Length: 491
Image (cartoon, rainbow, N blue to C red; front, side, top):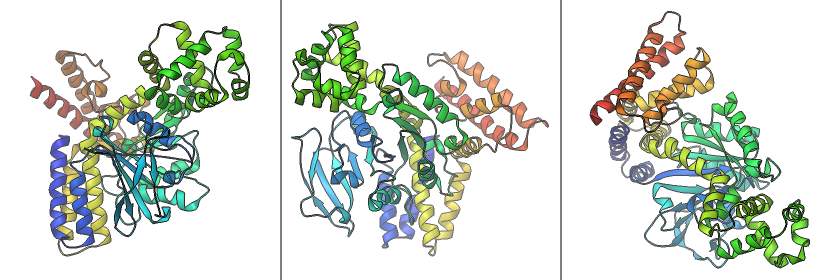
């Protein structure tokens, strides 16, 4: 279904390229057509110091993005898979120039040379790595920066005035909910085609370990906060869900070194009470217990890499299993960081929907060109866009999901919860839509689909159902019929 939708959307874009051939719009649409065969584009956005670059490094598994306040953090930077290592500056006047770079420091250092930051539209980093084959990651400057120009770059990228956003989906990082966060995400969704909705946005409660003031149970507290945030109506309207992640811990786990494990073992060998007292504050860790065998520089590096929470956690893990290898410790740290949960949500909500999200992005681009610059043939294109949208069930599911999140579908809470699940609000896989275990057999799957189909047929036909629920029920019925078709094709 989704691959067929992508092909239909491609047909519309091909026709649009022909209509606008020889113009700037035609060249932009040609880029859109090429983009449809590329990996999903996922932008990482958020307020200043929310941990965007740190999370990007954790997702890639390498320390690429600079995490300081250097000039490169003020420019939208794209990280994509490729055959060679390269960095290219894309200038606002349309020119491109290669940039020198090196990895002597903790992250990739890019030399802008004599090129002013203000003249750079974006930076393209090509880095051959498996993690970037599934998605191109886009690091954006901080929203709410004290520099209006820096903040404006993120707004201009996510919600450009005269064209569709280059991002297919967004990971939005926040330490707590701020009015600017909601305004920013509403701008990302402020388009008419297919009524875009929270299906392509995920909230990340970043620096989650700080919520519990670095205690070992900090992530438990963070998960409660994330669940509470995700349930708020104003958040549900702009985000699919909210996931807590200790970004620094995840980044360090992905790049853990043997010397760091050695230092952690040295700390773990001391009495627990003394170590607990040492790790109460950063100042204590830097100045007390000279018998640790760590220099002041070593301690500062450890604090910068792990934070107090990371050191406490790693030491605790090593005490329980003294023979733990560096690889095993890194895996356990990753599990505690929340990164595995985020990766699973990315897989089920973004990557399994990539064809739908890419089709949506392409149709948004065509729609923007038609509205802003109508020419002979535009009306035919507009009709083609409408036909694809009207005939695409995934878009109907997205519309109902948006209405559910906005609170305009009326019904009993249990029915609305099931509706959201059936239309793919918690993932597009059959077992996720039916609340079955992943290993449920075809008989159990078929029985569950048939029961669900019958239930939503009755709700749609019931005179007691609110009109909004009856309309949504027809979409749920079509979703169930699609699941039955899928089961038949498998058998």
